[in-house]
Length: 210
Image (cartoon, rainbow, N blue to C red; front, side, top):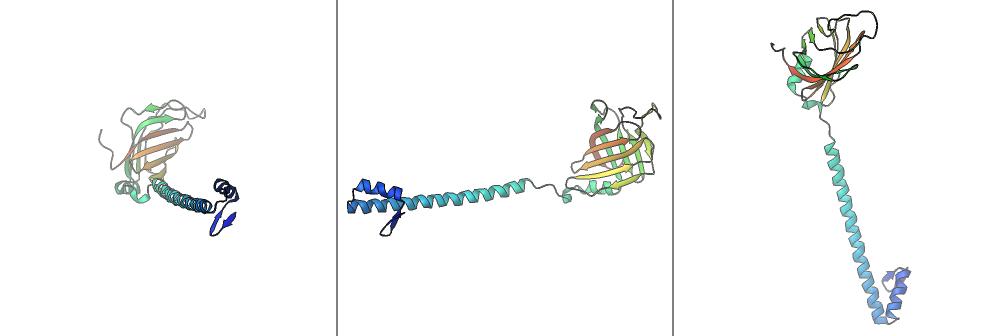
């Protein structure tokens, strides 16, 4: 760094100034002042750009954090909360996804009705036996049970998981995942058969008449 009076410039630029002014004092100091003026302007411009970049990054981080906010438990519809708490709801399947076989549409009057201590199940079943014994041609998911173990998990965000273990030798468990918009996933684990899943909707209330 070369210092001339109150001015300071890098050595690489200092020799350029000397060459262009040929040591003539007036143009030499004029060139030095011109250099420092432009240098300060560029420095201020870079500082301004740095501040703008910092502001942009902060705004972008705030926007990202806002957009990733999950649905809180308080936004779960109160009617559905009451229906689940009071065991007063009906699930209607739309699609059937067996563990063994292809996905199908649930065409027909199918449902799971939970009314207090009573569970009424009428679902289509597609699958196969896992063990040779206990074969029956009857639909294993067509029954009524009044002695049910109902476990309601902690509500998390936009979903609520309820596990039901009915008093039925064919069914080990039925796991319902209720969403705040009414959409529902049901996974059924069988005792001697392949499992099966359903997607559909849950509505508060009783089973409508056919």
